[in-house]
Length: 210
Image (tube, rainbow, N blue to C red; front, side):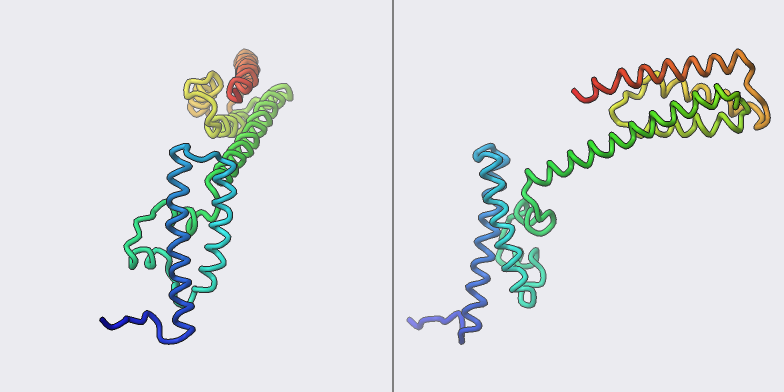
């Protein structure tokens, strides 16, 4: 039997050794992802090990960028069925625990921003009525902005009082002329509906945080 050499020189030998290391990192990451999903490893242990694998992967893939320009193709070539590892190493670049924390933080931050926007629109709408800004072309844009901000806030149910009342008022105002003005009775009713909706809105926020 003739011995088959995989490499002809030191450079080729180093390349194949790097290929083997890359193969091992991808396989290890796939096993780690599955272990984490199945609760076979604690989040802290998972995060520590995953971070190490990601660092090793980034270092090695940078070294192999000329010979392995596409990791997915490398995985296909060597018949590696490792979708979780490819996502974690190539697409995400972060442990799942870190990725999820970032997503929650972004969602919370975004919700807080929309809540502040809703509060501002409520107060602006109520203040404008107190200043006797009762023409349709003055009231409609304010209620439209308030309705839009309420609809952006996912923590509120579709039948939330404020959403329903603003929709009713916008429908009523759209049938009037731009220069038409609310009567004193309409203005008082709108202010009452805004105040009632605002109080319901503020009461709903603690429940959403639970």
